[in-house]
Image 1 (tube, rainbow, N blue to C red):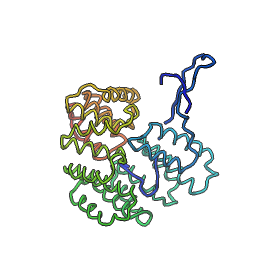
Image 2: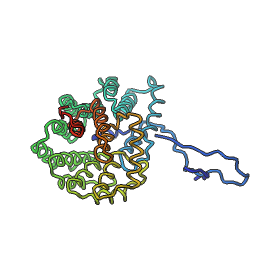
Image 3: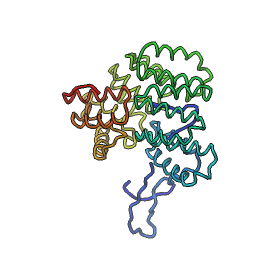
Image 4: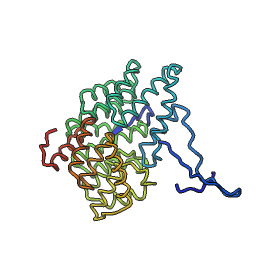
Length: 356
């Protein structure tokens, strides 16, 4: 180590190892004495050198241990690969296109992502079908989501294809029978990969929570070690605890497991802050960090985090006009059932009609 003195898948691509995320360092200049130690940084992270590494780095951005620079690093790699696209073989081109589409999806550029994926439509990639199904679900297009899920049959594990289909249908019509339908498939999961099984239980947990069964949701999530749950599952875990009024469990568990709140996911910080407010805590480092993050997102009119901004101004810093503004921005891009409910809630807070 060198030393320097300065002040410094709601979707998984389970069977395809797809994954997606930012890089920044700085140094303070000064004139040192000849014997002064002027270095004090961890070795700079090397550039990504392969598609395998890029997919793994992007995957790591989905977890609580993320460094916060993953997506930028992957974007840099993708840009360098794109410059030599014609020299890549067919498989490499396909993986690069999917990687780029995931980056677009991550900033709610759904239409661009779909157009991008048309480059590889003739390859019949299961990873592409999974991504297109997820995008369609986020846009509220359940028919298209189910069609892409159905195309997975025979191209990936049946567990992934079946979970995808049931999850898509549930997103439009939450019913107990769909939860039971997916739960019955648990008998056939003995040979599933850990990542597939984790997603299967996350979907069951989310369905259970939406149907008003928070205890069942927590039980499904407990099938995976807490630190191995992706952020999407941790948000379900938080909401399940909220329904049970286990606010202290949320704050203490996150305090124990989040390595650096400055790099923590905004959605997770939001849940953490809500849990603190429920316990009467009105000031904390978590809430201060969240406030700073939201100020930046408001200034940028950030569409990719618009839902979180809207919830912040509904649940933490009451400002119904701003909440409505960002709920409407979010609705322009994402039109799942949860997005509709958020828009209706924001409209109600502003005394408006709740029809989306």
